[in-house]
Length: 301
Image (tube, rainbow, N blue to C red):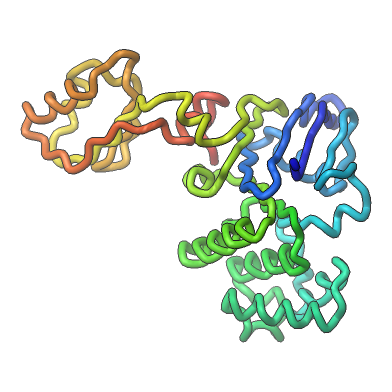
């Protein structure tokens, strides 16, 4: 069963069409990446699932049913902008939000305590939200999203404000929840996270679906046309052969897209002739970041 289905969904703001005839199906139990440049319609789409906004046209189904008030209790939503009450104590805040999602006070306290322990916030339970760092507040917001064990999670930039250690912790929990059967919609500009975590994606631009499907199949459709090279020495060999269409430089590492029909061995030969030391020379499918730029003509930011 599909966890979320959009059928011909359109949303307008006066003269601006934020989402335009969007058709979309998100498989149950998947991690699904909803991607696009700023202003593409991603947040509008997520807010329509949450019934914060109502579509002007089309319909949305969640977990096999039309949107309703009852469906909201089966969704966990982490918005990009934090929605915490800064004057409340952390423990009280989570107990309150758990109760709003139908948990008894006793169960809400129990779950909040367990999650605070896991995310290393137990010592902050009696502190006000405003006393926490941005990263700590993000972890509290994440707990509030998952405390009622919803089958559908909508996570808008869940790694915002997190250091690498805590970003890894949240990532591991997300994958654990997926293994337990949750469907996760991930909206982020961090393409490396999407590549590592998502089963399928939808790329939206100007409110329209410009690319969607299983991530593995999308990348395979481009073929292995990208060289990932790690080297030391003069990088002139990359341009010498005239076989490279475009190159992204990351210091000693380069991702180079080959021209159609180009033989990568000619590039390796040029490097050897110039006494360049090659420590990595790999023909790969294009990174999702390159596909993103090709489709929307903009760098994710």
